[in-house]
Amino acid sequence: MRTTTIALIFSLAMSVVAQNTNSYFPQKMYEQTPNGGISFDVSKFDLSSLKNCKALIKQLKKKDSLSQYEELRTLYAIAACYDKLKKHDSTIYYLNKLMNIIEDDRYILVGNDFNNLKADSLKWQQIANRIEQSYLQLLKDNMDKELALKVFYLAIRFLRTMEYEEYSEQEQIPIEMEKIVDKQGLPLYSKVGNFASFYAARILWDSKKLPQYYPLIQDAFFKGEMIDTVLFMKITDRYMTRFMNKNQIYGTIFTSRGGSKEFILEPIESIDAVNKARREIGVTETLEEYAKKNRYLGYVIPEKYYEMQKKGNE
Image 1 (cartoon, one colour):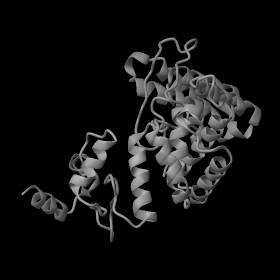
Image 2 (tube, rainbow, N blue to C red):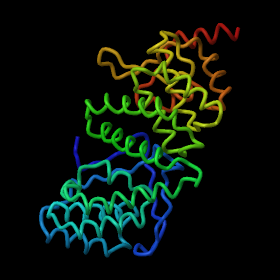
Image 3 (cartoon, helix red, strand yellow):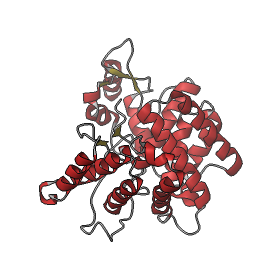
């Protein structure tokens, strides 16, 4: 996997919200779409010389010919170029210009493109502090910002494991979240906001002790303390199939076996039972619609479930 490609899981969510990049500081989108992200592939840029850095700056001045994404990617590439040359002040300058106009700057913490700047802890802290403050200012005054920030950085580490396939970290991060929950309780929406409550649950999804924590997640969801319904459905189905040896409730798990390109729906009671369970938590999308939407990924509902449905309707 290219280390120059930084992707945060699930979706692309990006926009430019100001023309004056020197004075406008946009509100970040962490709370609106905690699983959002942006991906910059700068592998086509030659970032090895000062001449090339300046060429990118010249390109950036032609804003009218750049799309919003291209403008952001070019700013990112300039900063990465200066980092390779160990010109920290210039790296910080262009990272700040980027953060002035982008709604999601978490990927700066996730990726490996600024390792030279990170080696200078004091200068890197300037960037980290700004990202922290952009996040914390979204939280209400009565929220536990210390706990939210703790989960925020655990989420950054989690996203790195997804990007760079750091398997030892993938096992360690749920253990650290378990310790947080054991000591301070499950980070709830009313206590830490949407981003931290989302990633607390998402990380526990991978926990080997999910049966211990699932009742907390379930209670939080039905009390409105966890607002991502899709995540709740996926955690529930994992809990039922992997730990309780029972059928899925919401029909979110499709598995490929024997190297097949098709992903087959894991056992459910029936299509009608799944659709009823979905409706009960406010999901209007049926199992059939969900599978059809993901057909390009190879999702398949076994024919036996359609036959059961047909017999039940006779």
